[in-house]
Image (tube, rainbow, N blue to C red):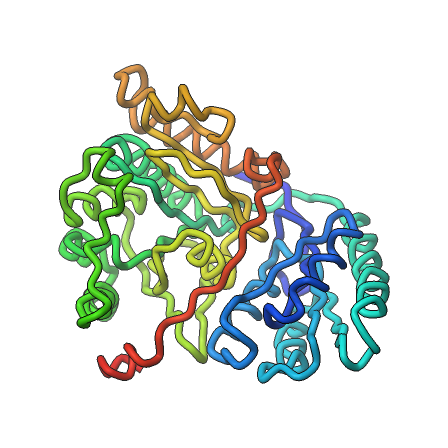
Length: 390
């Protein structure tokens, strides 16, 4: 099976031609937004952890190297602890255009905006000259995530996404699932899918370390939000056992590292992977984007209304009421499972087909609405040191 994508110089394939205007730190975010506002096809992003948060650099670099990105302009104020030049050096290894505007060096915000728009327009013009061409689906990487979960999530949307995950892996594609906190209580079924003993231990450690982080005095978290409870979920274990359904049933090939000095990308060859990271939606999607994910398929029982700056997001709901009230925010209706009108496999195939269509250029609901959420996850280094996890 094939999809229509954009060939990149580093032998990867993109499904979008996004030009990022990336503020190195939030100090220069206003200028970055004004640069992007003047150029159709440009998207502004930043991180919100200050200018000396060096440990988020791997995510920023990884996002810029994502194959959906055609080029990146870094916008620096000039006195940041995290200077742009090392980021440029790493991003340039992807073989795509990357440049810098330094506001202090160029002589102020207006000059930076003018020069920035000139650079970005050039990148956008080059990106528009590219044409889609067919690629085997084994070049595709899909992330799976859930949020706003209710009882229909584990019964319908997550299970249908799991069927889609199996179909993708069987076709040669790669699938990535993040959010270790939503695997607490599902340790055994996940570990049983490990391809070998080494990966089994990775999975158990992935879950155990996350559980430790949330049990340190002062950081305790029951992790059952109001929407989960109102949606009928009763325990974290029940929520987890429903959440992991979106990962399907194929063997788990590894847990992708996401550390302060290293973020592991998805290896070639397809298969199912877990990724270390957070459960918080935009941050999780940024981590997946940095690992090379093209598309995120998102299950929501209560109704999710956001997207991502780099990865198109396909929303799926299994709740008939949510579909009736919020169909304009949802890409795929899986509530037919709850109504006994359609099988899990049938809905899974519809999601699979939607993934191929979006990979080939179909615009998602979130993209139509202009949802370009972006934020970067950062672990608390004090908690990591306290627990001996650094």
